Length: 358
Image 1 (cartoon, rainbow, N blue to C red):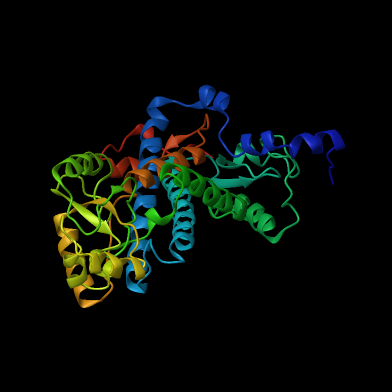
Image 2 (cartoon, rainbow, N blue to C red; image 1 turned 45 degrees about the vertical axis):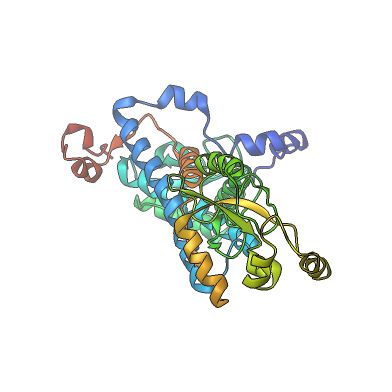
């Protein structure tokens, strides 16, 4: 058994080393990346990762719709975090499977887990020369595990190893969640569907409302800018006509549509003002809303039912994060060849797709 010295152990477990070993070595990329071999697999894998991330989050949103859990629910942000983590893991796995499918490597393929958690697709010939020290120079801490023994057995058979690794899936989940949190301006609610009777998942900016009065032209001009920049706070669409959406809705804030109507206009009776005061009518704000969501909201509030709608407000964020996670897992090797099956999918069966001789 090989042991690390105390100094090496301290260096290995430093924060800098931990982060560094979670991403490809750019010097290695510079020396091994070949445009004719790796460009298409990289594009294919990154696209697969990005699409998988966005599709997974959309699927989780559909599940939330069925479960009647919205961005405004108490558990909305928690479930939004969970869906982001799971989608991030799916994105990483998509890149690994796409990479394995598109590239042909001598002796098969394997994903090497090191002591610091480095996790890259690597050729058997280049990472299995030593049973104790892997290609990154770190000592594997999984050599005594059943998983490691299974890997060594599969390596000898030239079998493709599973891409699933606990350390790396956890890192993908954490990385994707952190990126989504900052990209969505500090909230995971954007991953959940919107409740049309409450502030939507895509809500960013709003303005003060004048009681139950509708938005005037000046207010609509401001809301129009919000609409074009952020979209409807419920569905996220940016191209539709904007409406100033009272939040909370007038009927909910004033107790009834009649009370809301009586409180509207320049000449509100003293009795109505006193009535609103003792009822603690909340301060309302205008949010940008499209006409379609306004109709759904009107029916939901009138009939006192919950109406949740899905949206694609997270799509661009998910695509970007999925693409980045995919890049993290792509590791070019000098002996790489295009897989014949992948080459055939592209309609270009030829010499570049021939598998390396064993």
